[in-house]
Length: 86
Image (tube, rainbow, N blue to C red; front, side):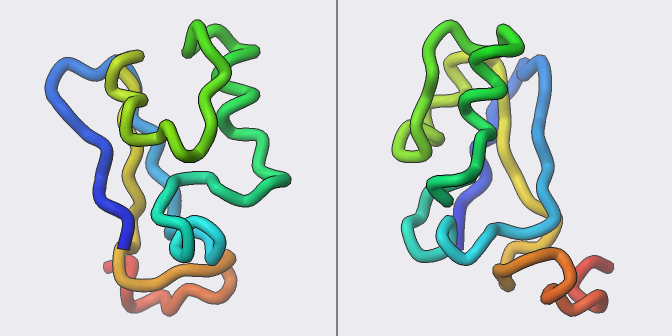
């Protein structure tokens, strides 16, 4: 299970549905090699450095938080049991 990356006074929190399988295995948010999350954050000016998934727990330094709606399951959205969303 990935822990939330939240603290006080954040400017933005990105909330996913559930962690992907690669993220669940590695313990890092947006860990799949084809995921462009950190590149997009950098290109959009949210971060001054291009972070890697292994640096996800440092993202609060940029006043950004990460969390998911579902904490006990992983996979694509279509694989998530709808009852875990409530």
